[in-house]
Image (cartoon, rainbow, N blue to C red; front, side, top):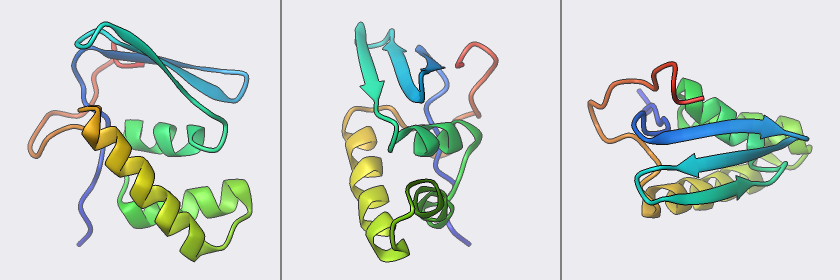
Length: 99
């Protein structure tokens, strides 16, 4: 079974705007932006998704080969993890204030 990845629940608020994602990270006191290619991944991570599900979503949304989507997802997830934007193991799913 694949690991379910999700955005962290605390101190992270976001909105979709014109196909992109605008993020307010209260923990680090910063604004972030996710472009239109990353937006479907961010939205899927808000609900919880495996890396495979993310790759399929990206491949479909951006009409790119699945292998390329897998590599792009790996980089995207690694970048989010480096910025502490993903939930840790056992962390509760995003609550109503997250979005």
